[in-house]
Length: 59
View 1: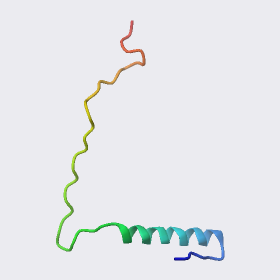
View 2: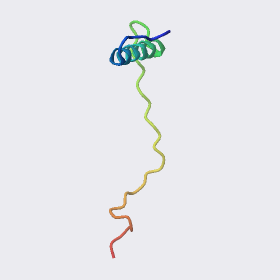
View 3: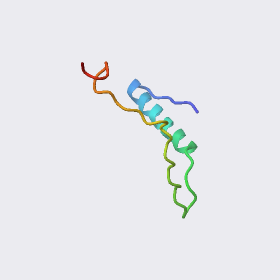
View 4: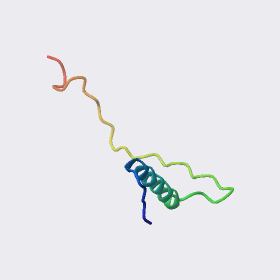
């Protein structure tokens, strides 16, 4: 698919339109009447304490 326009501004718009069209074509969509499955929680690994200062405890 070629993208052309007489001006750089027009070319930029055509490129954005082409990118959006391509994105929409490759994004999976649920079948009619079905809902999207719930997102699974991400594993964030072991909990860590935040330090209030770079050196740890204040002296």
